[in-house]
Length: 337
Image (cartoon, rainbow, N blue to C red):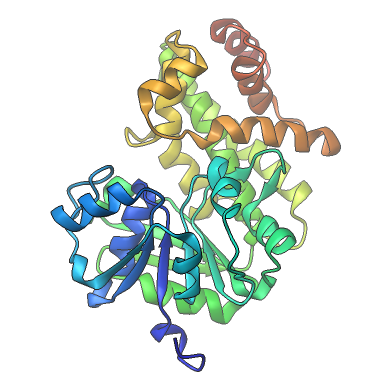
């Protein structure tokens, strides 16, 4: 590994083996680039090598496996990589990093995790800085609106790259841009990360209302109130940057997550609205709805800030206090306009 290599020459490693990690790997291999790829399960790697696609997620994407160096050992993956793109679901991040003996404070960290670290109640960039010594200028985060499934289909998508280091965000944005992916940059790291957590919560609310058979008229009211609620919270907790929540990374990501058939948080919420328990919904989906964990984390964070958040509170009451969805949403309808 050459210490003096340019950003564009540095070896990228995809951290995670799920659908979003797979979509990002497809993007990262634009123009024939080689990548490293960390997956926890060796059997998934062996099946991948044999078939040329991820056997567990987005199996329609064919990869040139000769251009991929796979690792099931997280320490080796980090040792031989310069840029680490984390796409591990937030509830499992600590579990993966607990195996670390290899420091990565000198690496470039790109977080594609649209969640928050449970128990710590910390956004990903704060977690990496506090517990792994990564400098703020070496961290960037990416936000949608961008579903993995549409990347697989090469449908036109947009990503925002946020970093306090403008050179880093512009480098990474230009590196991943291609014929079906347009990019933009911002310095609002904390705002985008909290918005990414909240849009999953609101997508669950949207799904619950869909499961309860509320119509499009109410969904429009719910989402318009959601973006205002998001704005109140983010402006309170992330005061270091100005933002316009009508931009794609905030409103755009909220809209696609609240309405799309590909949204796992909306799907999860819809099942809750139809009467499934949290546990049965999680088991049937076989995918992580990060908004479930985000709801509890933001609720606990907001005990300090006391922002008016009736939609978040409704989700929390349904998911954690086990209040019947039809009763809780009925109460919510009287609080929003």
